Picture (tube, rainbow, N blue to C red):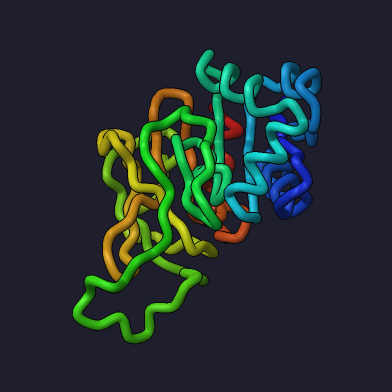
Length: 206
């Protein structure tokens, strides 16, 4: 069973439907007991970093989620579900993340660019991904495939070996990461049509 963490934020139904479409047995999980029954875990999210991590902690999910990930449970996160894996996020203040991965989450900053004409925040819409290293989640997905983004913040990783894909928006940023059982994307697979479904199918078939 694939457990989608329900912490009251994000488009959970569209995520659930997309995973079911590619053959996944999916349930929403909102308590530590429900989380413990999941063989794989999905953490989506559309909200502010601080609010989301606070809600995970208030439901008692942050610690068991971290333990499950660190114990080797296959994990897929996207958008905020990627960002919360890191040590700290700077959206509306400074907030401690789950600390599963080293690094921080920062806002797009185009101040050093010669020209930022046309670059708006949030980064919204379709953009390409450059594959940095092959990994199971990207099986069958070609370099320069287009996926759907909706974010104002992005991760800056401490260990560049975990970078699975990068994307160009003013400058190159990390758009997905992979380490062992952990795969997470800044883009939204459930909104990325065939490419997103291919990624979700790879996760289901692990």
